[in-house]
Amino acid sequence: MAEVDFDQAQAIPAANPAKRVKLTGRAFYESIGSPKMIVAPMVDRSEFAWRFLTRSYLDEQKNKELLAYTPMLHARLFQEQPKFRDAHFQPTKESLTSKEKSQVQPYLDGNPQIDRPLIVQFCANKPDEFLEAAEYVAPYCDAVDLNLGCPQGIAKSGHYGAFLQEDRDTIHKLIRKLRDDLDVPVTAKFRILETKEKTLDYAKMILDAGASIITVHGRERHQKGHKTGVADWQMIRYLRENLPSDTVLFANGNILNASDIEPCLEATGADGVMSAEGNLSDPTIFAKPPEDETSRDYWRDPRNPAVGGYRIDGVFRRYMDIIHRYVLEQDPPQRSPLYLPSDKVPEAGHDTVVGEADTGTAMAEPVTGTKRSNDMIGMNGDTAKQKSSKKQKTKRDKKDMTAVHNPNLKSMQGHLFQLLRPMLSSHTHIRDALARSRAGDIAAFENVLSMVEAAVKQGLDEENAELQAIMPTVKQDADELSSTNGHSHQHQVDEQSSEAARERCKRPFWVCQPHVRPLPDEALKLGAMQLSKKEKEALAQREAADSGVDVQKLKNYRTQEIVTDALKQAGGIAEEEIGLNKSQARVAETLPTDEKDKSHLRHVDNELPKEEALTCG
Image 1 (cartoon, rainbow, N blue to C red):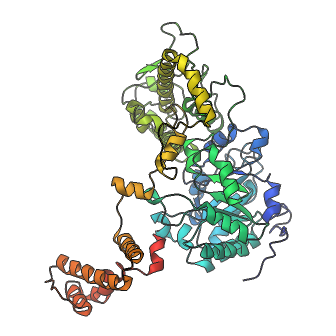
Image 2 (tube, helix red, strand yellow; image 1 turned 180 degrees about the vertical axis):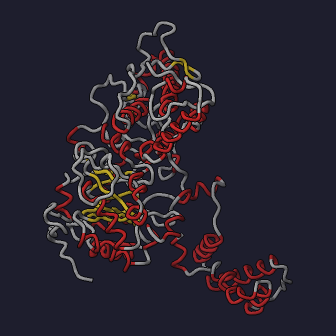
Image 3 (tube, rainbow, N blue to C red; image 1 turned 45 degrees about the vertical axis):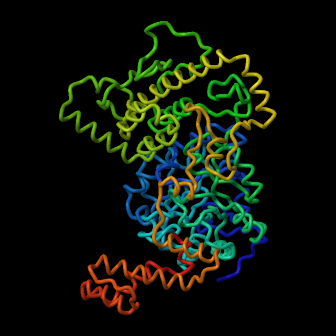
C-alpha cells in the first residue's frame, strides 16, 4: 500500500473538476464548520425529519457545529433499484435517476438550507457498487461514509459492516475507489478490535486507503444487546495519541445525555462526539437549556436546580409540526401553548377529552377506541366521515403505500416508542394507541400526541400539588442539593454500575431521558441473558488461570465432557474412560455419510475455539 503523508492537509482533484474542488482530511473537516456534535447513522432512524428535529433545538452558531449522517443504505440495492433510492433518499421530489445534480428545487435530504452538513452512509463489499451508489448522492451531500461497524446478524450474512474486519484488502479497495473516483470525500466508521495494537493497525489501514474522517465506536463487534456494556474511551485516546496529529477523529459510545459530551471530548481527545441511542431518546441532547427560565418547553426541578430537561410533549409536538410542514408540505394544526400548572383553567367544554385526561390544547378531533382513522397522510376529516367504497379504499391504499415508501413517515412509530419510553409502562393506553398507528396515518399520531399532552398535564398537576404541600422544605432541599452539585447522599451506589447511570439521568416521565441498559454482568445476574457454551468455556479458562489451574488440562477435560454429552444426545453408550478418536467415531456413526468427515469440527472445534476467537463474539 502506498504511504500517505498525513502531516499535510490533502487536496485531491475532484473526479469531475467542473463540479467542485475536493478537499480531504482536516481541510475538508474545517470546510464544513469543524463540527463537534454528530448525529449517528442509524438504520431507519436518522432520516431527514429526525435530523431536522435535532437541528431545530440549536441556535444558528451551534447548528454550524452539528454534522448529521443518513441511515445506513445498502449500496448494491441503492445503485440497482430506483424504487429503493426513492424510498430512502429524497433530495428532490423527482425520482433519483441521474447522477448529475438536479436543477429542480431541493426537497429534503441534503437541502442546503436545512439539512447540511450531511454525510450519506452505505454498507458495501464491492468497490464498483459502492462507487456507483455514492455517485447518485454525491451532488446532495458533503461526504460518503463506509459502514464498518454494524454488528448485526444481517451484516454477517451479507458480509458487510463489522464483518469486513478480517477482509482488510476489500476495505482498502472500497475506500480507495471512492477516494480516487468520487467528487466528495470518503469517511469510515468502525469498531475497536480486541487489543489497542490491532485497533491502531486497523485505523492506520483505513486512513492509508483514503478516509478523510474516522469515527471510532469504542466497543467490539460482539458488544450488542445485553452484551453492549461500556464503550472504551481509553482505546480511542490511544488512537488519538498514536495516529498522525492531523487525523480527524470522532468518538462514539457512552453518550447518555448532554453532560457526557465534554467529558468524552476530554477523555478521548476526539474532534467530535457522535450520539446514536442517546439522540433517539432525547433529540435535544446537543442543546443547551433555554435562557428564558419561564420557557414552557423545558422542565426544571424546583427541588434540585442542577436537574432539568426538555419536555416530551414539546418535542413530540415539534416533531409532528416538522412532518406536517416539511414532509407533507401543509400547515400544522393550530396548537395552544404547552400546559403549565400556573395557567388558568379553561372553561368547561373547551378542552378535547382523550383517554384519561384533558389535553389542554386545541387539536384535531382525536380517534378513540381501536378503529383507525381513514384519513391517511393528512388531517382532512371528510374522508373518514364518508362511507367506505371500493374506490375510496383503493385511493387510501395508494396513500398508505406512499407512506410506507416515505422514510420520514415509516419511521415515526419507531421514533415515538423510543422517545416516549419513560411513560409507556405506566400509561399503557398511550402505548396501545401508538402500537395501532400505521405509517402515514397522521390523524392517529396526532391522537397519540393529544393523549401524551393529557398525561403530561396530569403529571405536572400532581407534581405541583405535591410541591404546594411541602413548599417550606423545597428551598432547603434545593440549597442542599446545590451544594452537592445536584446529587443526594442518601443513597450511595457503585459509580460504575448502570444503577448509578440511571440515578444520574432519571427525570419525571414527561422529560426526555436516556434508556440505560444493565451492564452484561448485571444482565447475567438478572437472568436477562445467558452465556453461550463458548463464553462459558472462556470464563472457566480465565477463572482457572486466575486460580493457577493448568488451562491445557482443563481444555482436555472439557473436551472429554463435550464429546460424552454428544454421545448421550446421539444415543451412544458413554464410557467412564473414553478416548477422543473413539468418541469421534461413535458420534460420526450417528450422522449421514456425507457429514461424517465434519463431525470433528462440529462437536469439538466449535465448542473449543482458539483463544483469539473468543473476543469476536
